[in-house]
Image (cartoon, rainbow, N blue to C red):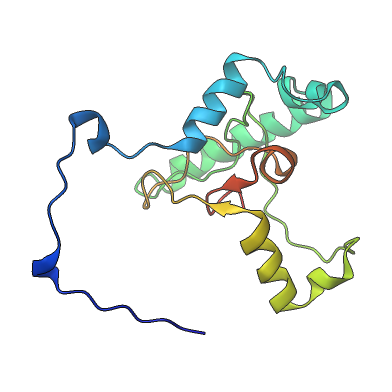
Length: 157
C-alpha cells in the first residue's frame, strides 16, 4: 500500500546542527574499523583464519588480479579502476568473484520475489554508500554482513 504524505515546506522549522552532526556517520566504516583493529577477534575461530589471512591459492589469484589490473590501467587509463580485490572487514585484500551462477538455496521461500524481498526488508538494514558515485573502501564477507552486522550498502547486499 503506497502512502503519500504532503507537508508545506514553509511550516518546517530549521534544525540547528553542530559541526559534528554536519557529517553523516558511516556505520559500515565504523564496523570495518573495529573489526580491522581487533583483527577479527569477534569472529568465531572456525571462520576467523580465512578472514585475516590469504591462502596460497588466494595469493596466486591475487597475483593474476594485479597483473590484469595493471594491463587494464595501461589500456584504459581514463576509466574508473575495477573493484577486483578490495580489503575485507579485517583489512585483508580478497578477490571479489563477479560470476553469477545458479545455486540451490536451503530456503525454498527465497526463490520467489515477494518472500525474498520481505526477508531482505525485515532482516537487513540498507545503508547508503558514503559517496554514491564511488565504490566503497572495503567489502565485508557475506558471513559478516548476514550473520553479524545484518546491515550493508549496495555492494554488501
